[in-house]
Length: 335
Image (tube, rainbow, N blue to C red; front, side, top):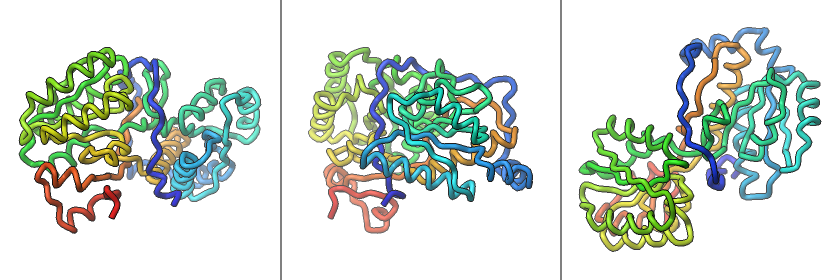
């Protein structure tokens, strides 16, 4: 179903500089309760009714389309109204889009996917843009919204629940792609009582050299390998099969930010809950209209579902009962 459009995997973002997003001095924290209160104001309700929130999303085929449709469903559930949505092609006429949005009184555009975000580049400055469903963004793009990459804190807490004896997470990353994520991951690991051992690989050859060494030296009881969304160090055609093989042979648990890796043998991964992501984006858009939520940096995705590979679990001696299995949204291999 579209609601389970959980399978959206944006292509990795080549050439995106790293993201470091300092909080500006004018950022005021707003509690959800205060925001809910703001949203009940009649003039705000009227403004939403006038089409002040629009969604721009890529005009793509299935299976990707249903993921965006699920996000829009979540947005409408949260705003309790039909929002104007505009499917865009890569060669969209941004001036025409800008004119249409202005004519319809748009105050906030929720841009979904890289194509949706690119289409908003030429919009007037008074139209706020919130991004969603885009894999990695750089601070240079100066975008508010939610990245498509899972929050390391959510990944690590699921890891701890599955493997309570775990002490250390090993990751190989390219700083040009993933510095911002690894920074978040360090803090997240510390909060869970884990040590993050991060190794830099600027290219594929270095990554291919590092993984076998790191996995050979790892302790299967206390160490696990994390595959982030990084097109250099988690390259699909050569690196992924290598890491899956080494991890299987050594019994070192492997978990990922990409759900497709679970089908191929990673222990578990997290996948966007697109309807929930839509609801969160809508709440942010309503906040912008209420005039209360100032510039916030891009945040990683917390609206997630989890996939598990039972064959891999039993291979590493992890036997999950029916009750534990039910805590996962997707189970592989499918019975």
